[in-house]
Amino acid sequence: MLKVEHLTKVYPSGTVALKDLSFEVSDGEFLVVIGLSGSGKSTLLRCINRLIDPTEGKIILDGIDVTASKGAELRHIRRKIGMIFQHFNLVKRSSVLTNVLNGRLGYLNPWTSTLGFFPAEEKKRAMDALKRLGIDDKVDSRADALSGGQQQRVGIARTLMQEPTLILADEPVASLDPVLAHSIMQYLERLNKEDKVTVICSLHYLDLIQRYATRVIGLKDGVKVFEGLPSEINREKFKEIYGEEAQDIRATALE
Image (tube, rainbow, N blue to C red):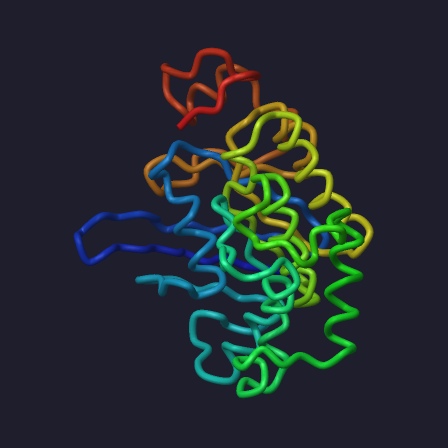
């Protein structure tokens, strides 16, 4: 169970990214967060795993106050929170295998792993993750030699190495075409259903929202303006979240 309580984030510039945001996420949910760019979606995800610190409020994961955690306790929490990025966040010049093994760093001796030495069992774990994502044939390729869809699958395999209970996916398909977008979302859905991993994912495409989300939260200017089922988001509700400029809500990615 994840609880977000009265979360506010004000950046040093004075920009208020989140305003008194509260909601809960049950174990095993596939929650989708929607809203215009600048609505606070990325800030929310980064507050949950403490990539950035909130200004006010609490984030409680499985009874532990993430916002108050420090040092070893925070590192332990982060091990169980996978992060998938829009632009993949891979080490471009490193091999696919090395990128996937990097997802295991929180469990390994930092000295040996920094030098690139990984136990045989961890290499097998990485290969199993790559096979699951259907990309084990690219194990020795450099990350920057892969297509966008392949790179995102490497990112998901890297996240698998953490054995996460929660995955935060920050617009994971925004840079992909519709066919690849569904492919990546299907991999996330499998993790959600087969591995019972809770997923919080920010998206724009309404067809993806209605296909994969179990529940939706809409943000506008850092404020929660919608919380409910994807089936409850009709044309008028979508325009309320995105503004009157939202035209073809089924085909257009609104930025």
